[in-house]
Amino acid sequence: MPSLGADMESGTLVEWLVHEGDTVHRGDPMAVVDTDKSAIEVESFDEGVVESFLVEPGTRVAVGTPLASLAPAEAGLSTAAKARVPKPRVPVPLGAPPLRHHAAELGVDLTRVSGTGPHGEVTRADVDRAAAEPRAAARPETAPVRPAARGTQVSPYARRLAEDLGVDLARVNGTGRDGVVRAEDVRRAAEAAARPGPAQAEAREEAPAAEAAEVPASPERSARATIAALMSRAKREIPHYYVATTVDLSAATEWLRRTNRERTVGERLVPAAVLLKATALAARQHPELNGFWVGDGFVPGEDVHLGVAVSVRGGALVAPAIHHTADLDLGEVMAALRDLVERARAGRLRRAEMADPTLTVTDLGDQGVEEVIGVIYPPQVALLGVGRIVERPWAVDDMLGVRPTVRLTLSGDHRATDGATGARFLNTLESFLQHPEEL
Amino acid sequence: MSITDDEARAMVARAVRRIVPDAEVETLAPGADLRRTFELDSLDFLGFVELLVSDSGVRIDEDDYPELTTTAGCADLLVRRSA
Image 1 (cartoon, rainbow over the protein chains, first blue to last red):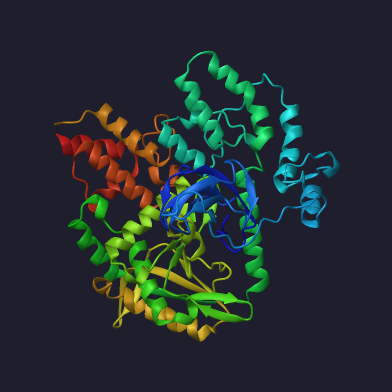
Image 2: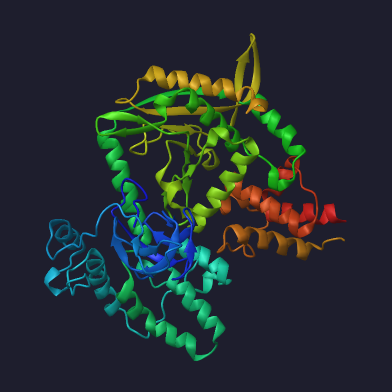
């Protein structure tokens, strides 16, 4: 189980994307992992043949737990080389402080929890399951499970699955906490649709039992908790400074209008793509804002991998990276942005995209706000907030005109840089935005 | 090939639902703001226009976007352009 973010302690294996005996190459997607924030594709760290799966889908394991063993491609299956793992598995013994704390939070009596760990140890998942049980038991077995009406939470992975399987989410019974629709519910609905008649009733009755057997806390609740932990850490540890400027975007919007007239719908650019590319180029000129604060010092990023804050329907927030943003042309940035947002919402992000951002951009312009003064994602050292493009009165050459403008706010980590660095960065960014044809 | 008003509305509903799977487009007031109702950001909206274009075969330019604010506006544009 790789770490998919500084704040990640464990993850749930959702499904295997390969079979035992398959040959995999470095970078091939192997499994889908749910991190509380979103479902993410985990790729192979090595070449080889999948020898065996060590973790069953639906299991939550700590970061560092081996998920599968790979055998070298040529040597066949005999010499088992474990897929690279950073840390050996650390089972949580009964009553270990973090577990006790977790159990206390959920009101679970540890002595009544049966452990499923290697030597019968109680794991965090066992506690979560025990916490979910009273609810499941309190619900009469025959009562129909609440259907997922509009507004009901659906896990990102479930949403993607529903699309793949052609399942109408409005007809799916959510069996997660508070009626959250989970992947399992979608699969059950798809099966029920395939076998009409009694199958449906049977599936419904099974639901509460199935929940008790495998469900950790509701994904949305955990997503909130993850964001809470990360943002608390940011505000606790990072002394933020903020510098802001308002930029005339008439050159950029005029250029976009011209170029988009010649582009097919699928190739059209949105202003966010221009802002991202310009930000990436500016970050390359100011490398002290592009990287991480680790321990007591700044570690520059190996390249500019811009993180893009994406809100996922259902309440989660992720900020995956567009790799090597500064080297992509605008069409490529646009394609990467669309692909990233689509996959973030479908719960199909890749491990590296979650782990690699060196500087994050949060663009809330679509929500109609003029200014975003954002919180830095630790361990990054800066974040650019982008507001809505607004027409403002604008003085130019002693004349007053109306121009499309955007408010750009840089949040900087004062341990790594000073306001002057942030100001220079914004000046560079502004000049890039005045020459969109060169981006 | 011309598109009828009913076909146009169905195309609009289908396109919205590809982006927001649980969107209840049919019960939406014809004059309601699509982007606001379904919280479509600029990328969602681009995807929406792309689906309309591929489904209907009509040409839609950026200058037409103001007409695409509501389901009625979208349907009218598709009907008019396909005539």
